[in-house]
Length: 499
Image (cartoon, rainbow, N blue to C red; front, side, top):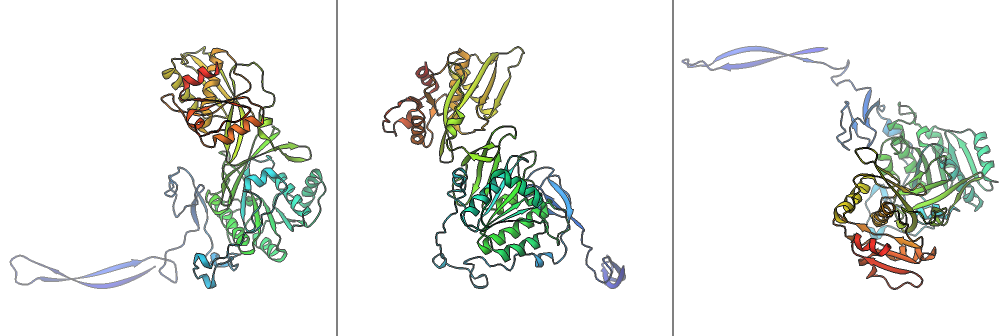
């Protein structure tokens, strides 16, 4: 602590006097700080938001960045000068220009690079046609869902085609990886394995080997020595992904990173991780079930909301090339409350069965349950039936299920859901060769949906003979041989067309 003294002259005006009185005062200013300089002491920890990565010097109940509550966590601050030592900063991106000089669009070469096929048509569809060199892909999913198995099979397929692959594992030993690899079949070609979690050593291996595809399993186990926080923390996950992104873009290597998800179903670590990568894939499904869904929620090189369907077998994952066929397998015959609807997942039409069960309630308040469908949407459609069609559903319990374990939210399933509820309410089955789709509004009208032509052709391909669809869509379609098209403008017309 040190003190400095300053002399201050203060003039006070006194009424009735010609001159002011000069008052001398001595002001002492106390400067506090670290020994040797006057700077404030640096904090040893900072607070990060788990959702968006917002950084703050103090804890706050609500994050100013994403406006979420109770997401701030305390972690050790980065060491001074650590950013200058970050690996991968020396790599140069293609077409970056001399010393970061901005380029015109005409000066950028955009040679179309050939995508690498993974050997799985379902995965290629979700990726937009195959693996793009220099891309960074995040694969998330629950533990045990099959993320590592899928990527190991992809590496095996690529290595068999002459590609150089590097599989980096931070969770399994080499012996454990070999036991898992023996289960999926013989591995041939340049497929190399590395068990390492230190990112600086991983960078050296990648720069030396220069593989075409790198798999990092998982990003939560990677760490950098210049960051004092533990592996899997917000700082480590964010900075490790940044290094891998620099390697992917600078060397033109396709990098797959595996990310574990939390109990809320999001990738552990900051949500900013999803903004850094080029593609985000989620592996969904129950571990006890045979089928898995690979859903693309972000893709800079293709369409989003595409899905791929896989089946878990003893020798690994096997793709299901016709999801509609397996979703409709085992349908009950002459059962009320079962309706086939056609929904779109990205650019793929999928036929599935919507089931509804309406039973009289034994309690004062009716119960509503929805599995695979939006709960609030079910309540809304039942209110439309009560108000517009005069069905007394307020004293009945309603149970809605989408067969196959899928979770669908497209508005085109509204009309099929309405018909399934009425079918169970009246205990009258729907023609098993009939497909129904359309959006229902609050006035009971049936609104048009997109890509109706693809839906109709998918229904015809699977042997359906009748299709009920919005009348507005019917006017834009040409007659399709082998299937009868019925256009409806409201819910009442749809009910009359079914029975």
